[in-house]
Length: 398
Ligand SMILES: [Zn+2]
Image 1 (tube, rainbow, N blue to C red):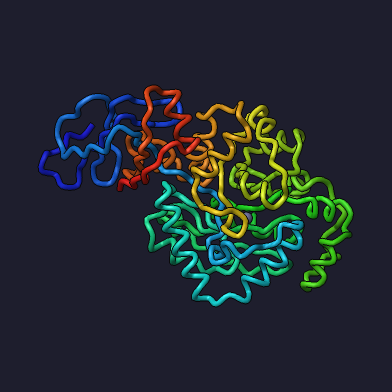
Image 2: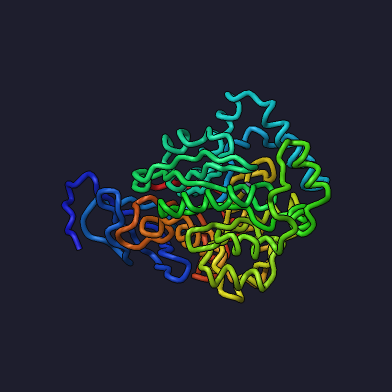
């Protein structure tokens, strides 16, 4: 371990009533020593050397990882989008977004980034259909992946390998199996794979998706036709969304599948066998589909899902605390440690930043946050965090 000079201005010691290194490693009355932007030491009691900043009786914990956002939709917050079925919602969403001034979309995205940071998120998986949010992320303190999303039948993506080393990495997203031609799905996967980068894709989200894939007909077929997206060459009908993507070669350890509301044990086992990452967006699912993914079934087979808030067009905040509190309420038997892992280290693994984020282990990024909970024991601590049991603001520590 390095020895720090007391006069070294780039070193600092942050202490608090609790240090949550990870959901299973908690230190009472502890500290985190940061040197040159990296965590150098985590310990208990009174540290020697360096400038000590006492944050209070609450907890210092790793930043949240919000693995699925659509910041370009922040401007649509509170616009009373239809909750009368997914297809109507999508139709209204596209119309509203297309009618919005670019300036307002950008302003909304900047506001969204501010909300993410203030509520403890340090890493983000951002999906961009219009391609307008990359610079906003780059000029923020957030790390993560900016996924340029494609759908329909066309493909002209470019991706540069040297971006892998940057704080914000660029990769690709395929929208979903019911909106994107199989050739395009495979092309996107091939380009992402060649660059060793994750591909994000919405999977098994709606009844419309399942019905369309299994019949090639119905309201979703009409919707695609109205939008000029031909699907006669897509080889429909096909099997379940997960089995279909598996057959196309899309499912491997560099794929992040999002939603999985309409997926069963067979699907979970395919995902597990292929080491596929899973991202769940519970509040969004509840609002848009009045149905939640089978979290218990996923955990039972050994999947380690991460979390995303989805967009402000379907949830009322980008706070991961609101997401964890919702899960805690909907799945009271799932331990708070599991929910916290989903919000931190599981997301870091999914976005390929586990060497820098997700826990407070030495060597990782010296960017974390302080939550002003007031608790007496370890069990209460985890419950207070996931259930958002605090009244004053969190503090971002960088
Ligand atoms: Zn999405």
